[in-house]
Image (cartoon, rainbow, N blue to C red; front, side, top):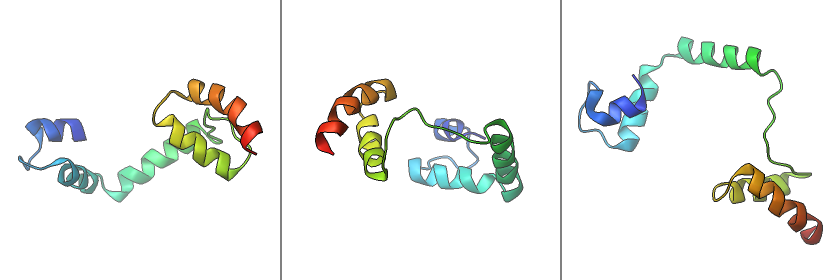
Length: 87
């Protein structure tokens, strides 16, 4: 059962808050199911790449922080001008 369904009351444990529901949902997915998900993801995307553009771990950190407030495209536009000046 999904977290959304759990939060909408479709969960076997009604009245759970968001943290409790997510913990309950995580326990509902056993280790074998989690392993299968990662196996399938690895097969589909052997070398996953993000959309953010960066040259160092610090630049990645800044880009990730900015991406919470904007799209990756918008962050890339801003950091293209910011990183050369800031470095």
